[in-house]
Image (cartoon, rainbow, N blue to C red; front, side, top):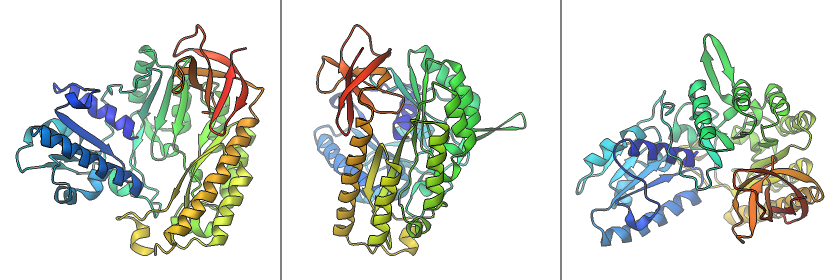
Length: 427
């Protein structure tokens, strides 16, 4: 989401006479687009701001701005704590950036953190900041109304609202015309996408069907899905369209019903596992990834073991794993006790990570000997003699360079693997 927002920001500023620089030393304005989901993310931002402060000492006219969720959540407190900030803008205030920049002056920070009930930036064609020109990102909706007790998104990004379906289709066609071959549709919960068109509700499954039919050379991915809204209709749509990738990110967060209830996740362990079974029924071979939080309020050792058992039951291909960090302006911070000691959280996280590495390796080993269609995204980071790309299951594949080019589809036979990567060659 932040990457997509950064492209929107770059477009708004470009239309107002600003130009984007890939060289930090050349920039007159430094804008940090932030996330508040994890405490670690905010700490990284604060360290980055201190580095920018050192740059401003050498270049006093340098303008430094903080954008996004962290700006929305902490607002004016940031001006007091980070006295080098010239500008603060929330995620619904990007259109106001040119005006805010004009208002910047000595001892005065420009601030706009007003949330909107309608803003989707649907009419803005983003400036593409990615370097490979192959994979693009499109936000199809903004905000969230699930109110998970640990999550700041409802307070930092506001209520849920979907983009005009036709603006999404136009943006994808624009990417296709520019040579892109993959697009990821983004939203806090893409399954909740709804657009009223001539009295008919367009669901996310409807949108996916339309997007997939634009051109079969364009691969379609999406993130993130909420388990309670993963419908059979959506799974059938994925199964029926060859260019919709066979990979679903389905955050579970915990394997314990007691913890899921305190998290306000609105599903049970049993309901989650039923959805996994249905995914595999409709889409054999579909990769499933997830998010897991260890040490949430009141989590017992038994709860933790239930998470580990669920991981083994599902056999996730990949997972984003975190220990719980309390966030202000959340239901958990206001009503629950953050009572799991940090060393216990850390130990449980290590166990989750260790198990997931085993599961990822097992998943990748099962692919050895298979041949996959790979979209070449660029050179391998480790060697210019190898290409890097991904298969439909979103697994990274490394293979020796051939006459093929970035943006082409090729068939690659998998010869060996690690827990993170498939390695192969063209047959």
